[in-house]
Image (spheres, one colour):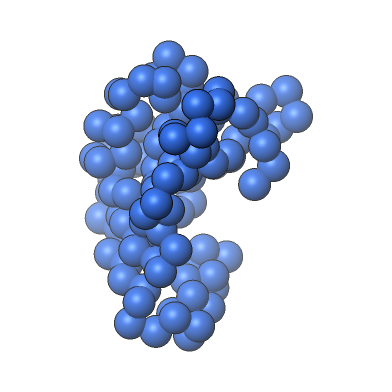
Length: 116
């Protein structure tokens, strides 16, 4: 069992029917459209709904990632907390090898790289 599957099993045990996931049917061509850091996830799941947010399908993520400021700054927008923060992944990790951050779109702040 992969780390992703183990984590999803833990989420299901903890939150029960508040966790909904769809198993992946993505092929290698489609997986190549997402940042490398997310390919393991999308190999197993195409989308996940959690009580604290949503991980979008590749199709919805690609569409969302076309919006600014994501597109011009190289971010892949793959999820949302359901309130105000987007979950983002860089296509190319930063100088510290980090790929993930979240961004509060209502804050007025620029998107910053962090070690999520």
